[in-house]
Structure formats: C-alpha cells, structure tokens
Amino acid sequence: MSEANDYASTFAMIDIDGDGLISAPELQRLMETLGADVREEFAVHAVEVIDTDGDGLVSLAELTAFLETPDADPPDPS
Image (cartoon, rainbow, N blue to C red; front, side, top):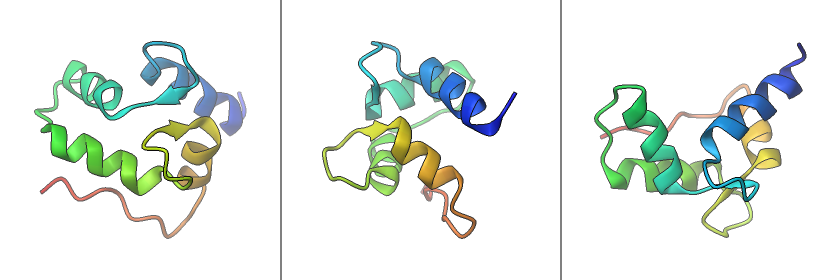
C-alpha cells in the first residue's frame, strides 16, 4: 500500500462525519478513543497547525502536506 493510500485510510478513520474534512472535535474524539486524555484546546491547536487555508478544518491534501514535510513540528500538547 502506498503512503497516499495510508494517508487516505487514516484520514477516513478520523473524518467521522464523512464530509471530507477533519474538525477539532473529530480529532479529539479519535485521540480519546485511542486512550489519550486530550483537551479541546489541544485539538483546536493541532488543526490550526495543519490547516493551511484558514478554514478551521483539515483536508486530506493539508494532512498529506503536513505529514510529508520533514521539518513539520508536531502540535505542542501543553
């Protein structure tokens, strides 16, 4: 499986409502499902870091670009 397919599969798992975009609540819900204790502020910040068009949501293209940027800083959980 290619990285692009991996990204699309991961994206689809996070995109709970299937609208083609990831919101902060969707990201928070996924992380909580995985056992992480995540504050809403962290999820909002994570989306802001990845969101390049400023719409407050993450598209597959934005997620892919973020994951393929070697010097991308992960969101600070503090």
